[in-house]
Length: 205
Image (cartoon, rainbow, N blue to C red; front, side, top):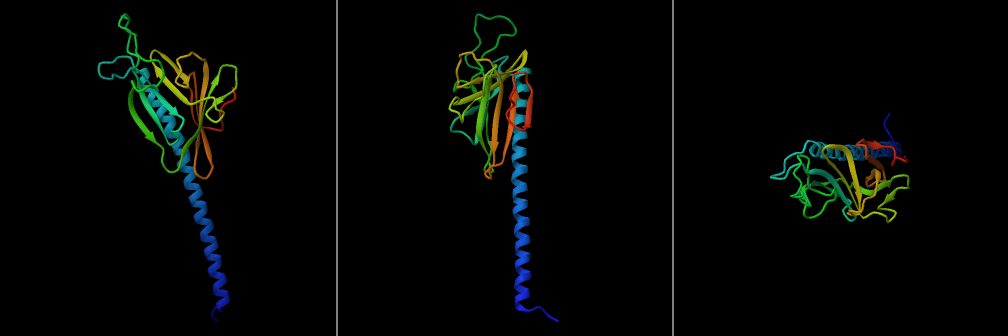
């Protein structure tokens, strides 16, 4: 006994619905995986900057340069790895630990690499936490730029905001990484040097 036309249409409809659900689930899974991988990649780039800075990686004739990552308003799809060589080392300093830089990215510093996120993923927000205060973020209008750098011999992270040399004691930095479907991941860096690749949120303390 064969299928009637109505039965065939119903069967094809069920197959199409199941296929659509499977494809949607697979697409959502892929986006989530790419987002998680991007968060880990950014965390690894922080580790690279830390490794370069603490090992005093040579940069031409410049010694003891620190390395850091720079995040900027209007550049949500990319960030910069830089060598902190400006201002240059004070010529009057003769100690072996004398070093250049001010922990802030500027055009006079060495741009090592620009990282482009791709896949519709953006840095939706970046924040810095002043000591015993509340988060200051791009989204709250408090920040336009964020720099996190490392330099020997101090293993701590130097966190600076708004490209300002005015000294503010920031204890943490946090990035909100977002996919096109609205899913998000958080990458946090503490002044102690702790880096969390996929934090559940920006740490509250």
